[in-house]
Image 1: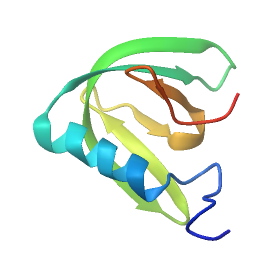
Image 2 (image 1 turned 30 degrees about the vertical axis):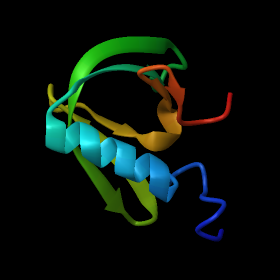
Image 3 (image 1 turned 180 degrees about the vertical axis):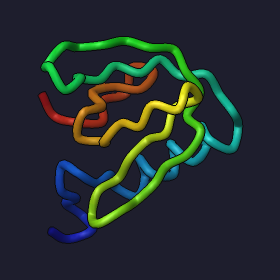
Image 4 (image 1 turned 90 degrees about the vertical axis):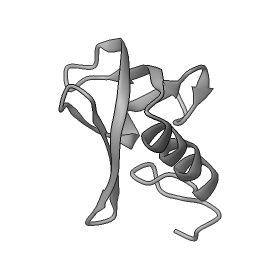
Length: 83
């Protein structure tokens, strides 16, 4: 995949920049994601870090929970993945 069309496991540069702003600003975010059982979950948490490992991007939440970006649907009303 090219940088213009990231895979579902990675985020585009503008989205990564937005996520880094959440980390640096310690902003509380409304995060909607799908858990491993397929349930849609909503949490209000700080994003502690954005990690990239083996071609996948992950969010580390303030609670310590790690989410693959392919499971994150929206952050503060902004869609990250396609439904």
